[in-house]
Image (cartoon, rainbow, N blue to C red; front, top):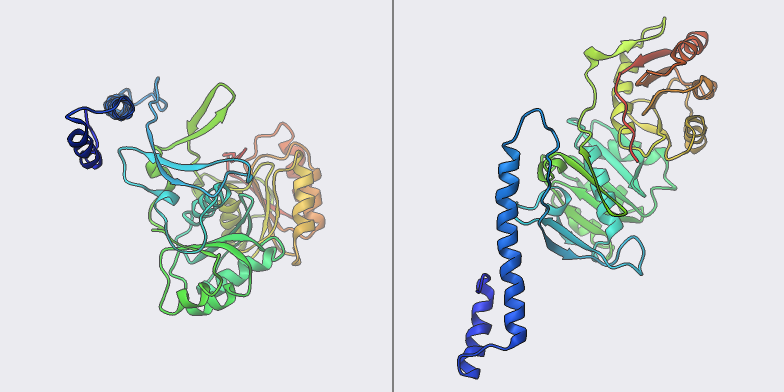
Length: 375
């Protein structure tokens, strides 16, 4: 059985040259293709029928994954590891898999992970936004009236860590922004488009990856809303964390209400905090991330680290925490730095203690009722 039209020519030539016979190796190769093709077809039917199941079942009883190689990557997380990029066989490429590379050297495994992280964050914003990613965490993030303003605000958070980063925009990159970008060593720039003259500026650096990606494409459109992780011996599958916030569900837990400006920053900080590795603390002011504590084993350590990393004054800033405070120490550490408002899920057995600490320090604190751990 021949299932791939691209094989027709070579098979015809082999039949003609060998008296209408094919070699054992050719038959083995064609058999593999045929069974792979029919298995994929059966998996597609099974997947569709599974999707028609009970509306009460978010996760199906069986999951059939059929992937096709999209690209061979430079290497994996480390140079000694091989890596490839795959996509679902029966769907059009989407998310970062659909990104078009306009310039630069081949992408690595880590490049794709960081591009995915940056585009997931940028998708949270309707306003002009810029996100700078390093090792799968945002080291800079901001909104602005212009692309240049958003970029410079994002860069101000941690310009040291931004060296060798991946930067995403949700608007076309203009010449003014490109001129600023050219001053920094960047692994990749991701944007929906590039205005006239931008490519000439950025491509002067031969290795920078210039990526074009439609910002309207949500990453989870192509993973059926599932988040899949490998563990030894199997897979963990969960719903993707696509929930963020509904301000009407927030509860002000303190005596002081947040101001209008603080609410704007609390919304911004909550969007960013959702994408930072746990335990996550984000300090923000003027819709700009100005201090980020990521991946620490204790929440108070993340609060202290976020302050240590900040190159700007934290006076009047807000703090976003991806989970509740088990003790008041994390909140006290932030208040000592000048934080004026806090957003967190709430739900600790010591919430009263934390609320009391906030009231003592004159802080406004909002409970969202929703946690955003990211492991």
